[in-house]
Image 1 (cartoon, rainbow, N blue to C red):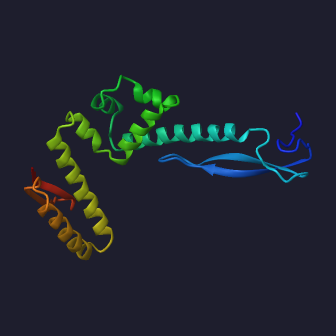
Image 2 (spheres, rainbow, N blue to C red):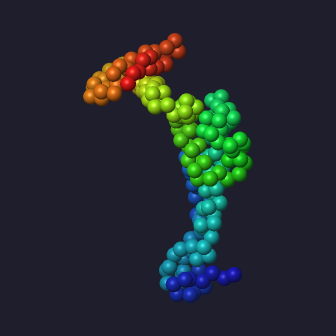
Image 3 (tube, helix red, strand yellow):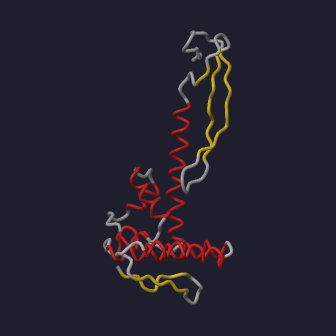
Length: 196
């Protein structure tokens, strides 16, 4: 089939292929070829054969599948069993396996991304979304992350500055009656007491 310009109808077309990569969260880069047609008669440019959408969708679907596999592999490396994940989230049995072997739904992919970003959210789900537990878990994880950031970047100076800001924030929030942070034997920052 001969390409023709949609603007002037000329079949005097030059075609350039551009190698591109597409990336989605927690996925690998997927390559695709973008076709750019150029009419030598009128100068119009575009995808005259309408092949780019197909190629981009192919790359996106591959990236999504790799993303799902990467997320599930990460969770398994963190000793999160698929049965636990399904039970905590009240998913039907073998749902995670179906996501890994077939194309996941948009909501399934979004859920996996949230879990990968905040793995501790599974503990909240497993605790039946108890408000007190979820707040404590959030504070504990925030403290751990804060400690790791400070430890990697001159802990003492940044900790004192951030601790002052944190304490000032707590002082303005009556729901935080008492919050104590300590380090455990592994030098991890933990919430030792948090009452509301």
